Image (spheres, rainbow, N blue to C red):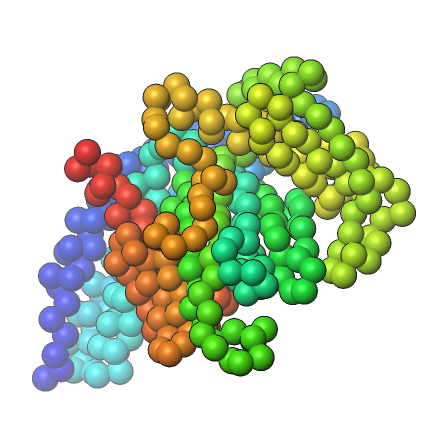
Length: 370
């Protein structure tokens, strides 16, 4: 007889899924989808392209959530049938298929459970992420570029739309900083756990002696503002500088002064954008990022929190939240959740889901204990 005692595992998954289902509320999703479909079918929808994009994006997200819920319900039912077939036929191949499906369903339910923990005020928003090189010279600049590629690849794996708004290249290698927009619901809630100082230990490719070097980079994540947020910024509170966009090695990308740098004088916040071809477009994108950062600052002030924005992280010793070690051994470890892996290459290739899930669960537990 085959050994296929997974009934308790299935029962536990059903219990967890019942809690998730209660939070996501498929009946409410169906009503929301009906309302959004009506709005999406309005003849004048695309008279306001930005608003139309919000409606279609919300509709797509709601439909995806509902489809996942219905799919899990069906897969759990099918799994129980598969288990019975395996037992009746005493078939090890069918039993192996059942175990594999159990593992796959458990992962999907685990991901859905993490989403239910994203209940902060701005968690449902898209995100703006800024990566800055910290202490460590050219190694830090190279590390910052490695993190940029890591997050872009993670977003690509998720099917998320990303836009690199601005990149400041370092002289020898890597980047001084980069700002990217992740235009996907819950991107802020998901990626905000990545904010902080990241530490890299490796044999430096830039050191002729081949010695082990430690470098740092800072990651800032803020929610993308919406039109309804109404963050007013008086013109006399900002200074706008224009310059020519440039790429690695200072090569000219544009022949006109299309890049824009905006400084918010009261707070000293600086935002730049050179992704678009026109100065008007770059200014609009930079203003949106500035508004996002000021929105987060306003929330912190309103809640009387005595903490600074992620952008002020020192990115040096004693401040790190995650370590990436490439020598003398290989390991990536999150110092908050304790999650770790011995495969840094996969992590730098965008395999961040387990780190993000562990971080979100750690954050929720920490919030409940305070």
